Image 1 (cartoon, protein in one colour):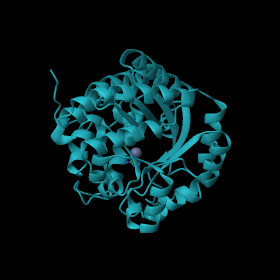
Image 2: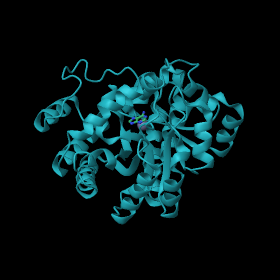
Image 3: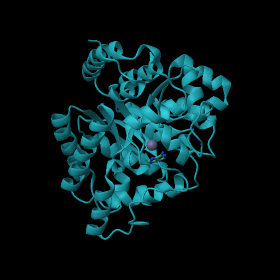
Length: 352
Ligand code: ADE
Ligand code: ZN
């Protein structure tokens, strides 16, 4: 007998990548509170109901920053890494993830680059073996550091190589509260020379504009853009990114907090997707935004007016935009194609 899948089940079972995922934000509320207590780190609140409430991106970044301070040893990092994958694999049919890790935030509590990466990668490797979720790591520059400190971080990454660390990104805001990609021109030039893939948070925040995405493309020559929604405010730039198929690592629910927008068919992300841009979907800060990848597809994409065929396209875009090796990408593509064959055949005809 032919099984029929609802749209909700189809979106839940759709194999997915997540290319825009900040490592510390995969930590559960229970772990965050327990670790904060263990290391004497004050949190804004320990009320689980209010723990993940934020007024805006700047307010969120305070909580995000504190979360780095509660993880002090490779074992603690490995436990967060492993548990985060277990939860995501169950919730969203996650098959591959790329993690932003901020060494400059961990350094503030004295954790060095090697113990940091040893812990994160050990946990993720164990989780890959148990849950079949592949991964890569992108070292993220904090935008509130100096251009010179950003260059030093890229040098450190190259001096302490791990096969899993494949990219350089940049997150947070500058000390002035701007995005300002061009500030990190030297760091990105060095990253490119050293063979790292590159991406940057741009075109996300209320005081940013399409010019921040243009700077990321024309000054930094990044391979992908994290967020980037504000390109829809500039028709010429939008036409260009569609033509060049620049990958956008988009994060729907996160825009309701960090950009201040409601989800709906007129949302900039809905317009970006409808324009034919190369978009893939992530959570940004899964636990810290009370979300998971399954919900981003089943609830938030649906709120943006995305149908099954488009969601399928976005999921496959995540495979093609991944920073993993060509062999790993070919294996991931084959896995997606196999799973999609069965899923597509079972989709209820009215929702296809
Ligand atoms: N760090 C974690 N999430 C972020 C976001 N959405 N923007 C900037 N920095 C971040
Ligand atoms: Zn982000």
